[in-house]
Length: 340
Image (cartoon, rainbow, N blue to C red; front, side, top):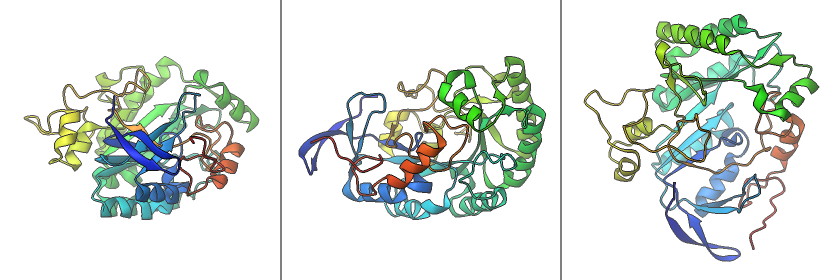
């Protein structure tokens, strides 16, 4: 997506910035849990800087034409002030809340207890509406402690506890063959894990679809190359034009970007976006997300999850999360500013 460009004033002088209609906060880190102060400051300034983690040029990102925000978190409670500010600005938003059950194994050491997270999820849903709070179990990690039958047992328990508070369930399988650093971090933590076989993924998808039918949830698979639509699981669109248009039905700019607002049957929660709506070319081939600009930074999350691909290591994530300067232009440790 080629976003419009606008001029902004920075401490370094005038600069040109992209002006996206939708931002994600964030696929790379947990902004609500750790960096809501940083995002509040940047919203007040009207722009931020995004430093390319792969060595390409950095970008200034203006919020002048911002129409909506998609949030991702494992612990929404520290970010409630950010949510209130988005509401005050009349910015439509929804939030993906990853709520896994790896408590027995201690694989997510920085998180509140499972019971507290379930309670927080329910309270957030009551505050925002169940259509705006999306439950993720992400990733499903196949290990000696969590073989497929055990994962399904935990999923069923969480379905029972969460189904009244959300409309949609998103999952993904841990593809360990793709991430050498994840394999190293798991081994360092003493976790004996492996990738799922194709047969296991298909079997689990069918059983997940059955669970979701029982509990009235719309299941989607995030970034999975296998097609599970035959058992009733749609390809994931975490940045979902249908949901954005549902939340902002009169927004002409979102309608222009993402296609028609209505079909004859309406826009159902969990359904693919409007016909012809664009795909974000910057994401993986199997990703169905509509275009959006992420504003986060890698290795700045302090949850310490052993399976994380966004941190170079759990310890590095914790250290850097504590070192992010809430007044820096970019979400990065130390607050160094490099675009003079």
